[in-house]
Length: 113
Image 1 (cartoon, rainbow, N blue to C red):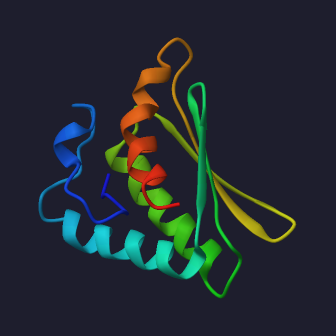
Image 2: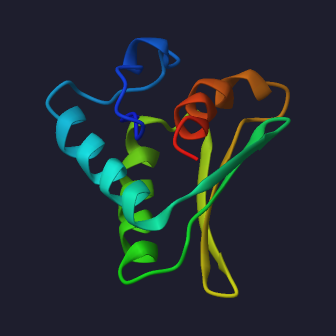
């Protein structure tokens, strides 16, 4: 997964992440832009990361597109996008019995809030 905070954290991700070196810079820019315009807040509870974004033009659509890409490279966790009262919400959930798998991803998002 690309690091939305702008730091180089790829090396700390679980080995199951298959994001290629060529994909990183453009994905990173997209996450950073989304975080600049939508001011997310993140919370990790057990094996689930919840990231709430401020609504805005194209925020939900961009989040959905980015999550579709993350599902392909970081399939070891479950990525879902919902919307509650107009607020886009990302949830990244670890498999049962392996809550530690979401922690490196949460660390990336928690530095952006």
